[in-house]
Amino acid sequence: DAGVIQSPRHEVTEMGQEVTLRCKPISGHNSLFWYRQTMMRGLELLIYFNNNVPIDDSGMPEDRFSAKMPNASFSTLKIQPSEPRDSAVYFCASSLRLDNEQFFGPGTRLTVL
Amino acid sequence: TQLLEQSPQFLSIQEGENLTVYCNSSSVFSSLQWYRQEPGEGPVLLVTVVTGGEVKKLKRLTFQFGDARKDSSLHITAAQPGDTGLYLCADVAGGSNYKLTFGKGTLLTVNP
Image 1 (tube, chains in turn blue, cyan):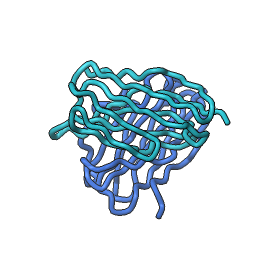
Image 2 (cartoon, rainbow over the protein chains, first blue to last red):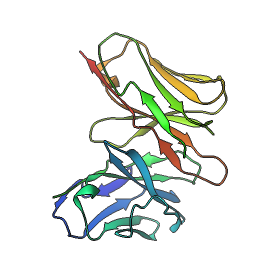
Image 3 (cartoon, each protein chain N blue to C red):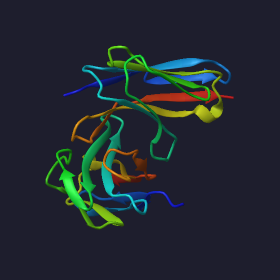
Image 4 (cartoon, rainbow over the protein chains, first blue to last red):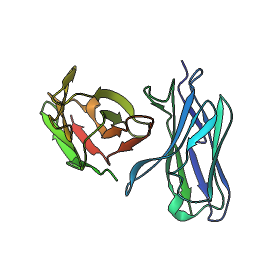
């Protein structure tokens, strides 16, 4: 069975550019979570969706960050404009329901020069 | 704001040794989860503990939840190179809040 799929796996961009990260949750899962992991701050929840609706985006660091879930099988996290301090590994996770086990994707390693 | 502290931050041991890593909270856990994250991968759930004093075993891994539900430990017996990874604890917020709050983890290296 396919797990959570994230693309790209690696992204290198220059400061000021727009970055779009993509996630395909496990089929049938109704909840989707975006996390960011850095050495300094560890793994932090950015935003989560239930049934394609954003429930809590209080972890989104700035207005430069936005996330969408247009349908049950696709979500994007966009950073515009990107800054060097956005460099991190971004994970997407999905779960059957909000209170069920979360399954993480392999992450996207973002480097902003 | 709840703070989760994990110790030690780094641990390097030889194959066959035993080890214990710790997770402490500034406030009571609703429930606690332990994850293992291998290099280049996302975290994978190992166990969820809910009741103070609870002990769960997963093969060579033993998880203990403190009586006051403010601390937890993970003990690995006879560590193997395959146990290498980042061990994370996470608080599972209760009620209608489904956020996971993670500690920064313990990076374990088991040398053959």
